[in-house]
Image (cartoon, rainbow, N blue to C red; front, side, top):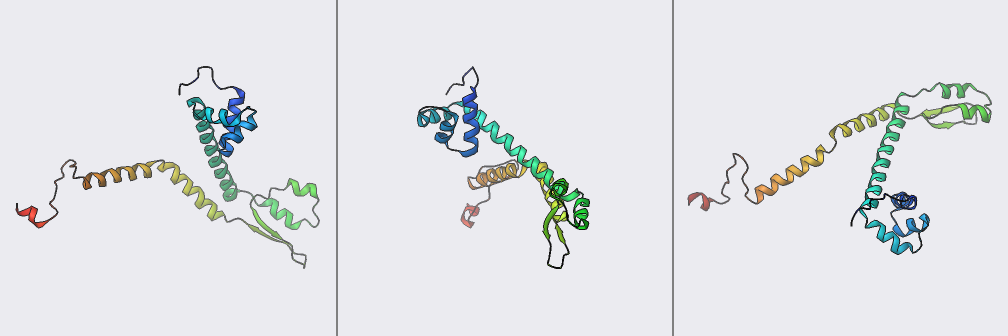
Length: 179
C-alpha cells in the first residue's frame, strides 16, 4: 500500500503504541478511539507508514530494555553497600530513613527472633558475568546469524553439487570412479 505523505495523526500514533504493547489491532483501535475498530485496525496494519512506526517502537523498546538491564547489572556489580550496613546498626529505623537508603544490592533481609539482622546481597560475580556476556553479545552482533546462513548456503551447495572455487566433485560410488 502507498505511504501517506501527511504523516501519522496523533490517533494513529496512539494506535501504533497500543498495538506494540498488546499485539491486538482491534483492542488498540478501540483504545485509540476509532469507530469500527475491526475494520479500521485491520486497515491501519496494511499501511507501510503504520508498520514502520510499530517497528520503530519495537526497536526503541528493545534498546531501552537492554540499557536498563545493563544499568541494573552495573549497579549490582559496582554498587555501594554502605546504606545496608548503616541499616544493620540502626536500632529502630523510621519509615522516612528507610526510604532514603539505597538497598538496590540487597537480595534479602531477615530479622530472627533474637533481634539480630541478616542481610544477603545479590551476587556481584554473577552480575559481572552477565555484563561480560552482554558485552560479548553486542560485539558479535549478527555474526552468529550470518555465519549460520553462510554455513547453510555451503551445505546446500555441496548437496546440489555446486562447485566453489578450487573444489572438485568427488564421486559417491566406486563405479563412478572407474568410468
